[in-house]
Length: 162
Image (cartoon, rainbow, N blue to C red; front, side, top):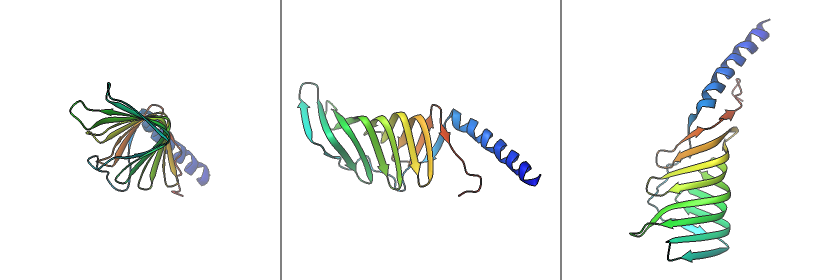
């Protein structure tokens, strides 16, 4: 009977927590805070530059590095500011973002350089050690080291902490 009561209490806790997760949740992201002012290094198989619209397209095995942050995708669009410098990076085709021990996957990501914010959308999967969360959208504050997940957020909680 004691085991049944513990199970019911555990399920009530998980159900209450699941509702909170369904509305959105804020989590830590990255063990070291990133520096959006650090140089951005991009490697890829090909590069096409359009001087008229101020954009560059990297394709094939794209890897972006900036300080401790790494982002990889099949395609990366770099949008430049009119006054010079990078405005944002748009990664598509299946994106992986890694910062410290944390990793996230999504269909696409939009990185606003000046804000130090990465918005990942579509089938987002965040892994932190043995924990995993899924959602439709995750907004990562690289400077603050936090992430906000929304859109059918789901996780499995282990009441024993294992």
